[in-house]
Image (cartoon, one colour):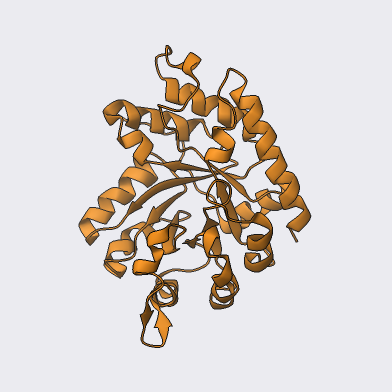
Length: 276
């Protein structure tokens, strides 16, 4: 049985306040690969949770959000799901929590996914795939003060296979962005726009002047924080830059959390120079 003393919710205003208070729009990705965490943790009852706990403690002052890539937990079976629940409950309520689950199915199935990630696991937001259309996303949007983060233009090489293809007078990703914006608002819809697609960010921001973007691909994937910040930021900041491996696997020894903190602090410092 799962019990929560409160249902997480973070409004757009509250998120913006956190960003400006910390001078940071950093989202730390908890892509916790059990094969890559420091070996001294492996003898503990829940090594992945202990790793996450120490990363959160070390980085919480320098970021405004945490993104949990659910695949790294689902692959561990029931124990992984327990770790994921403990982790999201450990994250302070001041931080925006994202389930990077990329769900999306027929309406009654999506309703169960929404319940799993918004009620049972108590995330603020979830990433979803738009391919099956409005009825596959609508159940997520019906939750008050929860966020649906729709895949718009991703950072992987395969984006060219569909997302960047021309469809009539526009590219497929442009059709997705233009269509999906009508299903919600800037208060409950974000879009994933990959940092490796820096050349299109000006166009995307012109299309969506008010929405927040979740931006993966900075760090190991080569995206430039400076370029993205210059092209994608709006008056409310409007972006969350996700960095995963470059922060959480910065160190391999017992001082791994100290190393992670140092990298997160560097990102925060650079962001402070760009934020309006």
